[in-house]
Image 1 (cartoon, helix red, strand yellow):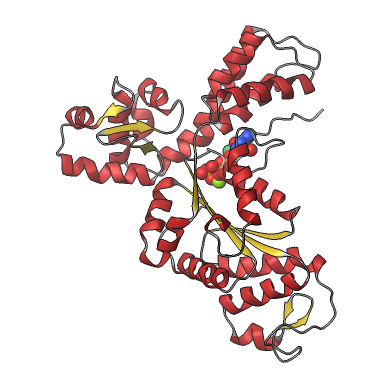
Image 2 (image 1 turned 90 degrees about the vertical axis):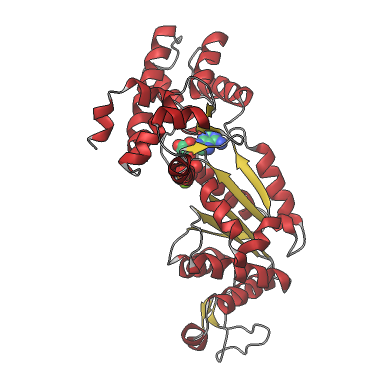
Length: 372
Ligand SMILES: Nc1ncnc2c1ncn2[C@@H]1O[C@H](COP(=O)(O)OP(=O)(O)OP(=O)(O)O)[C@@H](O)[C@H]1O
Ligand SMILES: [Mg+2]
């Protein structure tokens, strides 16, 4: 039997745990009139906090409510990808017959057939006109457009073009909605971009750790569907071990199922083995790539954060540990926040966002990381 748990990045889990409120708010927003602030959603979250999984779920939910979703990863080609994705996803709702769209006559402008643009449009018009034509054509057929942008990068031309197009089309009353997801550092810079300030009015969701009660309920349900017998205190232990981190939820569940057979009663021993295996995978899949993306200096500063006895760490203590000037430290503080590795829960404090990373940095001999 297939394992219900699926620890892999960018995949849609069999069930989205602990995000009911975000999903409900998003769906409510879709019912608002075009241009309403709730039609634009920003999803902020640290690495592995479940942004991509949530976008996949939102796209599915929107689909069953008459939306054609176009999900892209932010980048230079995203505008073309959006157009293509709507053409492909929307084609089943549009007849292939040559047609007329308001303001454009068939054959001359608009579409040659279905959602395929006429030669004239293809050659002479840009993203805004194309998206506008697609919205109109789909609206004729009772469909709306949902744009979903993952891994948002600040200050790129494509991002500005997309956002200003959305704003224009929404202002013209087109049936369009948008969701953008990214690391908090990237999104805060997007919001400070002059061209994109309208996004400040969008509905923002900060994806924190999943509530323990939701994880517990899910483990109880999923493991009994897997026909594993788990005592309540062991369900609690498994839940605690995830620290609310979606990727760990998948990993711990996955190893519990892998290490046992249907009908088995889970022993404390097996559970600890599953947790250890999950933590090893976490180190390989999350810590290593995260640390590899940082400079040796970044890592030195990060180690100083991890070494503090208090949680969150106090900035003055970190600076003392490092023996550096405040201005020097601030530079690295910003770099680490942008990388999504640390966050500032309040002024003068810093904490590491990735679960178990502090322990990992403290346990490990310094050479191991610096050699990378
Ligand atoms: N709400 C959730 N319930 C259950 N599993 C989840 C949930 N959110 C994410 N996951 C699982 O956690 C893992 C990481 O999720 P995801 O890839 O969405 O993270 P992310 O925030 O997009 O990470 P990154 O910043 O690296 O892109 C995946 O295996 C995913 O299936
Ligand atoms: Mg992702």
